[in-house]
Amino acid sequence: MGKIGERLKNGIVTENPTFVQMLGMCPTLAVTTSAINGVGMGLTTMVILTLSNFMISLLRKLIPDKVRIPAYIVIIASFVTVVQFALQAYLPELNKSLGLYIPLIVVNCIILGRAEAYASKNKPLPSVLDGIGMGLGFTIGLTVMGVIREVIGAGSIFGYSFADGINRAIDQNAGGKVAAFLKSQGIFEPIGIFVFAPGAFLVLAFVVAFINHRNIKKAAKTGEKAKLCTLADCANCDHVCADAKLDGKEA
Image (tube, rainbow, N blue to C red; front, side, top):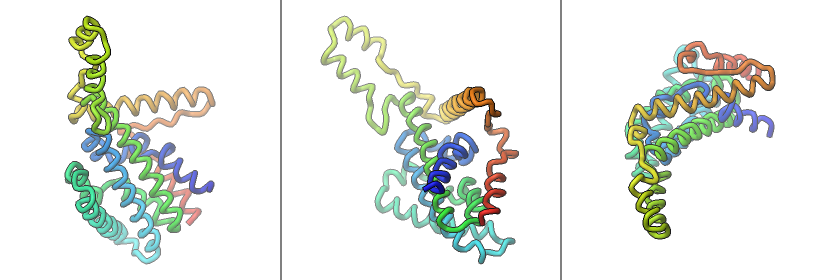
């Protein structure tokens, strides 16, 4: 149970792919125009990540070191194809909404990174747990982005327009002058830019700033050094290296 909790916490909190390691930014910024897109993309990536980790871990002693990256890509691409066919058959609307970003999971740096840093050095069960943890962290990150952008940019959440509901409630229950004033001002006027590309950058910036601020306050209380990650630090980020060093001892 301790190993499961550690892997889940690592993926969701400690090394969250979206808000800590800043990986997978292409789908994070592109598909999170709605909450349902964020959930769909996150869960799809989690399934592929988990299956890929499992298969790569099983084959880790058979894959020659010189061709390991091409081998990983072939394995990942196979699972992406299977999952995409399943989406086309059972969730065609979601498949159409995510579009090109499903095939691009093949080169998602989260999946390749975990294959190289963890699955290739550990047994199948820990690798599966790592895939689930990282996948859940990615799903949570995309869902948070999608909810914020959809609420602010479209006045809805998971497709339900709460702004229209509030306005209908005012029409039915409020007094004449009050209702007229509120309607003229607008209970909620969506800010359309948040469902476009600039809104994605703004939301990501504010969320990461909030997390960094929280980490600074937490570090001030405990006396530890705050762990802050920014996009500019990714090339020198030691999260994956730390995993590789730790996991090399466990393998």
